[in-house]
Amino acid sequence: MKYDHVDPVEAVLIHQDLNSKFSFGIHWGTFKLTLESYMEPKMKLLELMQSQPNLPKFAVLNIGETAE
Image 1 (cartoon, rainbow, N blue to C red):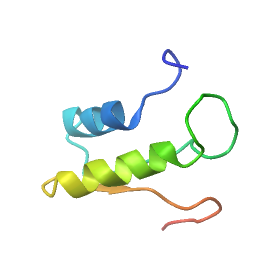
Image 2: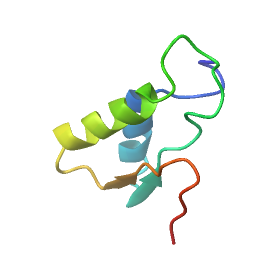
Image 3: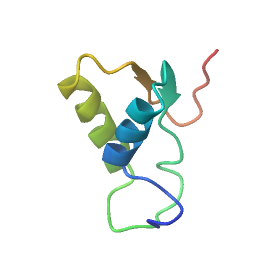
Image 4: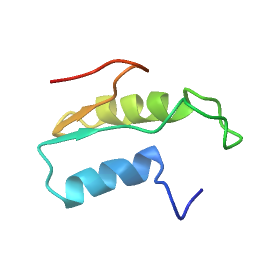
């Protein structure tokens, strides 16, 4: 899936490169397409966010959750 998707580390790098003020982690936990568990991308992204306290806002919604 490398050519169509980014992993959590790449998502954070893109977020930083774009100087984004707010980003969403999306497209996880819907279909089993890789060898990783459904929740692994979300968990890795949350871990990255916790390890980088200066990271601008990066939200990861639960399945079915919305944001305004």
